[in-house]
Amino acid sequence: MKEVEPLFGITIDRSSDRPVTAQLCDRIRRLIETGEMPRGARLPSTRHLAKELGIARNVAIEAYEQLIAEGYLVGRVGSGTFVAEGISPSAGLRSAEAPGSGALMQPAGPAAGGKPDGGAGRDDAICFATGVPDLERFPRRRWARYLKEAAESCLYDYGDVRGEEALRAEIAAFLLRSRGMRVDPDRVMVTEGSSEGFDLIARALRPRFDSVCLEDPTIEITSYIFGQAGYRIEPVPVDESGMRVHEIGTLPAGRLMVLTPSHQYPTGGILSIQRRLHAVRLAGEAGSYIVEDDYDGDFRLKGVPIPPLCSLEPERVIYAGTFSKTLAPDLRLGFLVLPAGLAGTFAEFREKANRRTPAVPQLALARFIRDGHLERHIYRMRTVYRNRRALLIEALHRHFGGRAVIRGDEAGMHVLVEFPSLTEAPDWARAAEYGVIVDPVEDYCMRRGFRTRQIVLGYGNIRERDIEPGIGRLSRFVRERARSGKPDG
Image 1: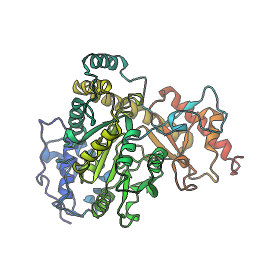
Image 2: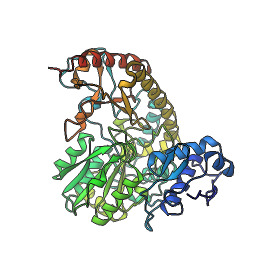
Image 3: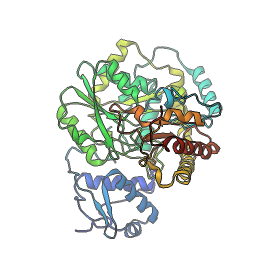
Image 4: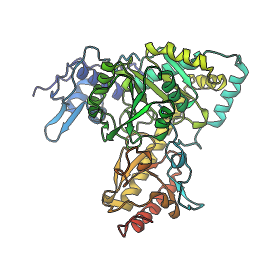
């Protein structure tokens, strides 16, 4: 196989604010998507590439690892790194460099941080809650100052139904810096958190659509929202590469898709580029839309943030983002990036329903982002979550060894843990009796009985000192409850 020339049109903009690793990933993706790097082509070694581009070798290694995780490249021991099969060039394909232009809703029960139903629990229980960021590190005083300033300057009229212009402009600029998305602020709609965003999507599109493909497993509130709006729910299985979109066949007219491509919840899988292209093609052929839930894309802990699905076909993807995971759930602020053909429809629907997001927190957040505090907070929290993830994985290895398989640990604030050696899965709710609260993956499944040995451990809002004893309690629970090989009862 022919090796791609080292420079092959790849350049690094030293004056850009975009990290070098992200730039290198962007350039290689573009070459693959346009067919200039044909499938099966061998890439230069990381040492050679780093030397030719004048970059650190670890940057080249990180870029290759990132693109392998996304499915663009494959690594073969002793042979090198190659362009993956199954990526067909498309004339209409948008590159990550010039896209045209999520939110994970907090589930009820255990995922919201409460005790699961059933178990008696203990007052000193350690809760590995999912979907909750570190609330102690939220910059309360600074936020209070911005709220005060916004309250003093607010006009207190009805305002734009799409949201405050200042915030929409700052969101568009932030998406360009963090995701490489070029977004027209007029296509941004501010919502009262992710739940309202998904409810708005479901109801505004209901006259044209009557069913929706959902990942299985996924958060239950998504199926609840679409179900309440009258949609027929079509569950599609998920594996380590995300939703098995190739099993859908053709997408019938009137059916939507909801995907969490950058970090599937709860499995943590990354939707491969082959499946992304297939999903976009299905939506295009059916005249349908994909709802992209990017609920924790700011907290990529390995590599760089993955380009949104929206980058491939902005006119077929509704991008949903949230500040609930980035900052705090109680802010009740999220946003949608709408295809140009839907912006007017959504604005009209919202106007008729007289639904608007309060202006004061919007103005405060706009200034918070403008002054650089959002990105500084994200940078700090990545370090915090990376350290917690390391402590959690070390504790799991120490207490379970090879009896626990860890998945989906590359991003976000949770990991999936599987116990394949258990003859019978215990009643995970009864772990509360041992002083530890965990989320069974089965709670997120529409088709039950296939993931009984899997749990989700969140580490966003847990204290570092509680991780080791929490896993120790979990180990005792699993050891004692699984010893007989009989179900609890």
